[in-house]
Image (cartoon, rainbow, N blue to C red; front, side, top):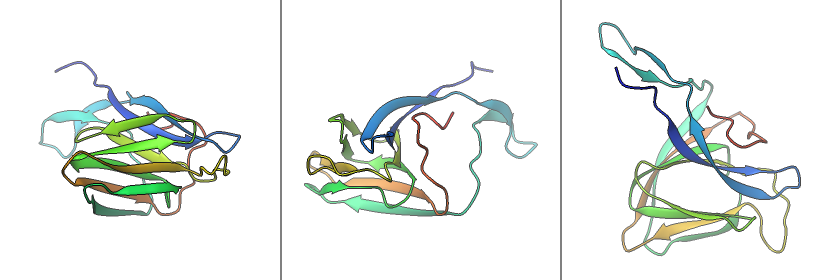
Length: 147
C-alpha cells in the first residue's frame, strides 16, 4: 500500500485580536482501513460528527462577496471554476477544484472597514462550490485544527 497521505487546505480563522487570517494547513492523521468490509482498505481521516448542512452554490462570473464573515464554520470544496478568498490581514488565495478551504472567521472585529473576508470568482466561468456547514459547532480559534 502507498505511503500515508497528506491533504492540504486553507484555513480562514480569527485571531485573538479579531483579525481574520488565512493559513495553509495539512491533514495527516489518516488510518488505513476498510470503509465497509469486504471493500479494500483506504486511507481515512478523522471523522467530524454532528448536525451539518450541505449545499452547492454557483458564484456567477464577476461575483464579489464584499467584506463579510462566514455564516457558520464551513468546509468549502470547489467543484469547477476558480474563486478567491482575501482575509483581513491582506492574504489573498485563489482556489480551484481539489483545493479545500475551511471558513471559520466568525467573531471578527471590524478594522479599517474590513470584517471577515472578501471572496469572489476568478476567470470567465462561474465557480461551483460545495459547502458543508457545521450547524452547532463553534469556529476553531487556532489555525490547522483539522488534522
